[in-house]
Amino acid sequence: MFDDSSSRIAQYLRLLAEREQPGSRLPSTRALAKQFGAGPVTVQRALAALVADGIVETRSGEGTFVASRRSALRRDIGWQTAALGPERSGIPATGSTLRMVPHDTIAMHGGYPDDELLPQEPVAAAVRRVSRRAEAFTRPPVAGVPELRRWFVSELAGVEGGAGGWRDSDVVITSGGQAALAATMRAIAAPGEAIVMESPTYWGAIAAARQAGLVIVPVARTGGAPSAVDLDTAFATSGARVFYAQPNYANPTGEQWSAQQRAEVLDVVAAHRAFVVEDDWAHDFGIDTVPRTLVSADENGHVIYLRSLTKSMSSSIRVAAVMARGPVRQRIESALALSDLYVSPILQLAALDVVTRPAWRTSLQRLRRGLGGRRDALLDALRAEPSLTATTPPGGLHLWVRLPDVGAGDVPTDPDVVAARALARGLSVVAGREWFPAEPTGPYVRLSYAAAGPDRYAEAVEILAGSC
Image 1 (cartoon, rainbow, N blue to C red):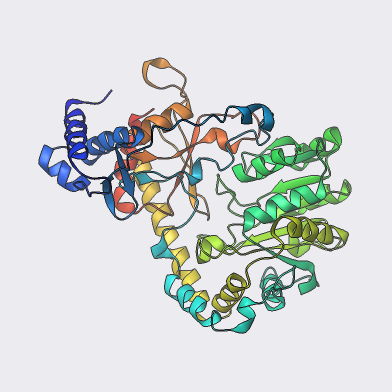
Image 2 (image 1 turned 180 degrees about the vertical axis):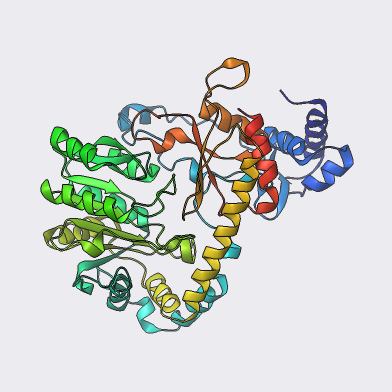
């Protein structure tokens, strides 16, 4: 229910929108707040209602505008329900992390760092340079540009002392980490087979497994990683041959496995003659620690290693790599070729240009410092609200926040309801349910400190606490 100020603002904007042409700019949030003597949250409530009604539209970084008039034409697409049959992914195909929100909303739901933390100018310069090269317009090998594949191998040489004999022929370049993940799951398990996953874990991995027709066997994290006993039991009882894991700065918890945990997991995987898909998506986001991989200790082809450059370089550079030894590597390449054929040579060459220049290391150091400052600022803001708790992740982009078990009126807290209330009040977060492959073990939400700036963290925490 809106308060009087929010209702007055909404009514004022409705009248303006009726008089103005579609596309006309409307007053800014600050101007409306000053005009009506209201706070930004109150203005956001009014805007959210008008956006939902299709009266206004917001454009990121530009402002609020009169929405285009919608046609009254009604299409009959009901036949698609029967033609498509049962939904296969189990959760929304793109998840809540990719939703669009009004530009003044405090966006803490996304999974990409703020542009000011990323090397925008070096990336733009790289694109300009490589676009003048003939090979940028020539179809590359299906497995990817050889020099870029060699770079991914060379990166492992700096992880715990060596690359373990990996070669560029073990690498396949993909159009982002999600493409790598989906193709790998299609390649190594058949529909109806089981896959073991940490719980909670990345929503995109859950969706990819379900879309591939796999049966997810969840294993709880114990002290940051699945225990060897639980993992062994999951393999033995399910017959699974694949384990998906995030040893470094897991999404959504931010946890990192210890050396002992890595060794124990590898022993269990080897004993069951299985694969572990190591998703090293946060390799570049260490704050207090450095990333340590499973693949650097693997000699017999049990680890399939995924690493993306998109989040640490630019959302426009959709480039990642899969590294695998033996026949499984060819299966993954074939799966990728069927869906993508190959990755844009311009993107591959631009990525290679960026990572092979000295400025790349400088930009990573700056990124990590920026993430560390934002993480600490958000933790400080949360400490002012005892009902919300979060541990300190050693790296990554997010805080995994525990909500109170019971909310107002002694009603059990429902994170989905909390997230919806927060969005109506100007804060966008992701409810914890999307990160659990089975039933949630408690009321959680994920807050990203990578995108929204620290100047709004106190406001965000206040809105979240008030939404419980």
